[in-house]
Image (cartoon, rainbow, N blue to C red; front, side, top):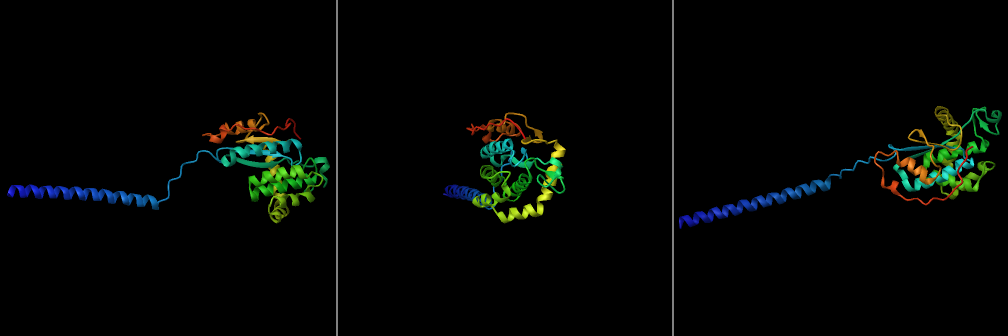
Length: 247
């Protein structure tokens, strides 16, 4: 009897220890789940993005070839999005056509080939990019290319911007208070990089010399990624343009 009682006690003790161990495991699991719920999930390291690839394109706001490049790059942006940084710039001359007010500002220091209204429009487009982003920039540029010209941009732009629901007061303020500094910065970049014509495109600081097409630009951009995003495998159906010259 004593021996049977001892075995029963040992069995009960074993069962108790086993239940205790299972209980502890359940408690630890629940604790870990609670910690994981409270802690933010780890973010995957994005090896692509604006820091990897930048596209700097120099145009004149009413150079037809520059406008064609804008249209093509807009289609590229529609594919690649924010995976690359698209940075618009403008071709600025000094003392063009004698430096008079029909083409230039600041006593002839900053000029545009197709006249002062083109220069002013370039400033407004820079303002839209600076304060409203590249998507708004492309929409504004495309609408201006279709609805206005180098001879009426100063009076035409506001209705276009209003139709796109852009902040016209902000654009005006930027043009009036920052315009000169913006063109100064553009002229300095032009001189530094030797930019003379519209369009001139740089991808990661290297002048692009490939085909002026959506497929060509997209291929040039995607070649610069450390890890190509899936967007680079997109088969593009582009709107054809006769892009062959420059201003």
